[in-house]
Image (cartoon, helix red, strand yellow):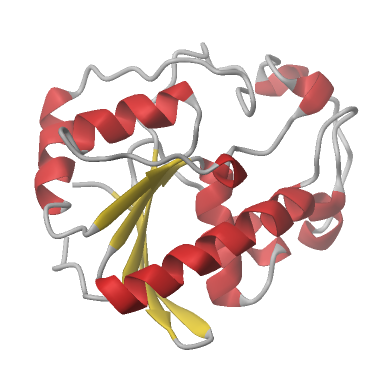
Length: 193
């Protein structure tokens, strides 16, 4: 991984969850922290990070604690994953088939009693913008959260919410955004250490 720059927002997806392959947007499932070597490498690569913020989800808090031991780890509820509503706990093959949709339409789909990706991005965006301002003022900020949170960061950089749905986000991967006045540039996506 290239050295982290002074004004970066570093988006880290939590370690694999103990959800058994089921959708776990708002379900508070633990992380599987069995890859100690990967956690150690990633933690070492993050030494220059000035601040860390985490989603309140257990899997995110546990990942953050493993990567940033002895650090203060404030939580921000706006960073929660998309609410999959009635689809929470389903295996991907059990989710009803929506038929062919372009990304713009898919971003607007809301599961029953849940939220769409576009609604989640609208919720997460103000938090990421605030954290980007901190990164520009004080140095790199790490966010330990979810795939949807990472995609929201990419949507900010691309200035296109539906386009962010094209990205896969692996557990314990890093997406880095350089924060610029009124803009972001993408340093890397879905990197592992």
